[in-house]
Length: 308
Image (cartoon, rainbow, N blue to C red; front, side):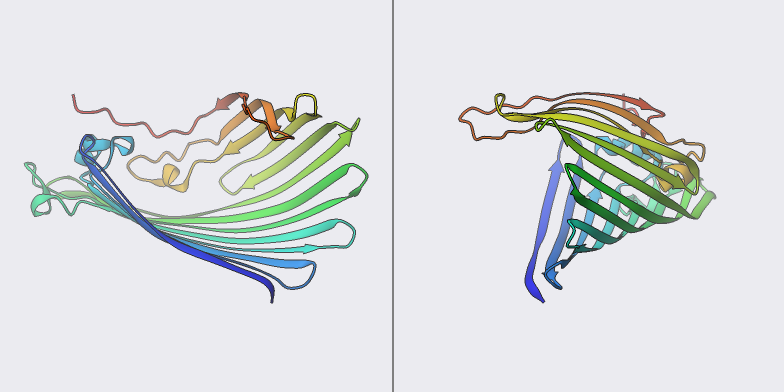
């Protein structure tokens, strides 16, 4: 194998706050490698892992009130990510890329800090939630730039997500509400993008994407960007419009306590104006950017009120 490159590392972080009364610990590592199979073919491999622990949830995750109402004062999570990317370049200024990805996440929320295993003074046993989430991704992309001043790309993406949960919610002594789900959904997407240069200094980029999911309506997303290169103004400036949508997570639609199976996808329309890059080095440097976004059916998690 030619031109082999390997890199890796480990990380550790800790955070604590007396004001919010919480602690956070994280350990992880990563490994990346790339090598050439031939003059025109190359492979990238990457893997990473993460293990986190939160003790006494901070305010942005619900805070003391959430911990008291659900009797959860510790969250432990483990995550692993794997990806493989293969690229082959043809002699006619075109290429094809294949990307495979796998993401695994396990989450355990419990209350080992509850004295005697009960929520005093009520004597209600501690709640516990065990969740797991997996995502598998396959992407194929073809790019071609052998036409005069035209770049074109098209591709297909498939994602499969599955989530499982086992939980027991104790409402009062002697009465519990077990809850579980085991769900799966699929997403198939096709997308294309075309770029055209004209009048030497101007460019136009058009994009279209179609997403079809097993549990949501199919969605079209469009994009348009116009830009101009200006040596006098020492930069590349553009104006763009982009549509996008985001479906709710499987947790948000299936969790027994906070889930809502009727949630719809969030849709966004973004208008942006600004510079892409500076063409020459300058002693003084500044950037600016303006954007406006319209959002429908915004997906949020309502934050519980603090103690009065």
